[in-house]
Structures are given as structure tokens and as C-alpha cells.
Image (cartoon, rainbow, N blue to C red; front, side, top):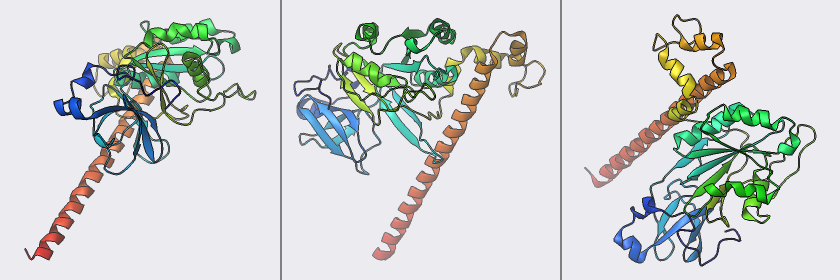
Length: 351
């Protein structure tokens, strides 16, 4: 639990709203405790309740949970059930193993942090926008380190060109006064999550919003103008403005899965062209009547953006199919084990 959290905390301060309240039974209201996951460790979870802080050891009987989740506990602080989520961020786990990794849940706004120095990358921003749109969470782009960039206005315009309705903020993460312009998304009842690559200034920005040095920060490497990775785990913090903040580690690899809707919304201009192609199975190479090729040749759309659209669509489809196949195999194996156990019990009973 961070230093802002106290035993006198209320559910409202933790981000509670009617969506979760409607899931409670009369028994829950009279006898049980409501808790929110504030930290996720290898062996357990840290939970915050109106009665104080609790720890919960991870066991096979528990569902897969993440920071931001709401749970119901009994009077002894033991897990009863997980409440339905308002939103969920996940990714394909890093590496060759096909598995899903939960990042954060019940988020109302996603702060996508990107530095304006050599780490600036439009395609990466589009990747984060895709998962935000798929989770139906409002994205806000926060551009940092403008003092290290000579063309910050041009780069801000490039980000805004991705979507005229997109909120784009340029801040000096070290200036707490400048950071106050983000408070509109950080009011009571709201939960904001911070995501971005390693070293983009997330920890410095979070410290400014919290008004204290909660997160460790690293300097800039002269070799590549990139910051040092400092945050290593997900954690929940209470903001002076009344909202809840979820910090996530810098992600060197954010592989998406099963979020076609999010990609289509992020690239609505490209998607509109795809739907105008003469053939539904158009590969957008040399086929006649290809609206995408026609727009590229006319200069009406950017080649980088089109390339990234198809890249993300292929990636999410491949990873989504792999995860679905893995779940199917797991279910089949579980059924097989149960049938074997049932058969063995029958033999022992002489059936």
C-alpha cells in the first residue's frame, strides 16, 4: 500500500461506482468486505478495503486477477469472488510461449506516455490506442521530454493527425504545475492507468501527480537518448485530486491479441478503404478495384499507417487464434483427466 492510503479509506476513494455496487448481494452488504487489488506480487496480492490492508496468497483455486480488480472477501479476509470488470487490459505474454498476461482492470482513462526525443514512435502509439479502444477506455496521449526535442510542435501535430478527436497533452514531467492539467481525468471515482515504453518518463510524471517521490526514476542514456527502465511491477496509488492511478512497468514488447475492433477503430480511415475494395478477400497488392492501393497512389493516406494497420491485424489474429487453440486444448485435456478419474472410480467400485 502506498503512503497515501490509510485505514480510513472509503470505497469511493478507491474508485467504486454503481457498476460494481449492482453486483453485490444483501449478504455482501451486511457481512462481507469489498476490496480492490493494489499490488500483484509473484506469490500473492495486496488488497485495500475500508477496514485496512489485506494480503492474499495466490493459489490454484483463485481466478487470474490483476491490479484494479474488485473482489468480495468474507469476514476473515478470505476470497469469495471476483466482481465483473468494467474494463480489462491484457497482452500476449512476452516470449515464445503463447499465454495471456493481465495488465490492469477497471480503468476509465489510459494515459499513453511517449517521449518527444529519439524514442518518439507513431506506430507504437497506434498499438496502445488499439488496446485502449478495444477495452472501451478513453485514451489520452501524454508527450514528455519536450525540453530534449527541437520539433515538439511538429511531433504533437503528427500525433493529433492520427485522430482529430484525440486528447494530446505536452507536459514537462518535472513541473508539478504543468502536470495539473491532467487532473481533469483524475477525479474521484476515476481510475487512470499509465502505459508506455521503458524510460519515457512515466515514473517522473507519476511522482509529480502524487506530489511525492513514490516511484524511482532513472536518467537518460547518452548513447541512445532513452531513459532507464525503473518500474518493475504494477501498483495502485491514490491521487491528491481524488482519483486512482495504476502504474505499469515499461513495456519493451506489447503484443496484442484478439482486438480487431480496437485496431479497426484506431485505423478507421484505413478500415473504411478496406471496406470499399471491390473484392472482400482483396490482398491490397495488385488486385483490380483495390481502394487502399488507389488511396496510396493518390497520396491520400500514409504508407506507414497502412503498413502498421495490416501488421497489427495479422498480429492480433495470430495471437488470438493461438490463445484460443491453447484454451481449447486445455479444456480437452481437463475433460480427458476427468473421464479417466471417473473410469478409475467406477472400476474401484466394481461398476
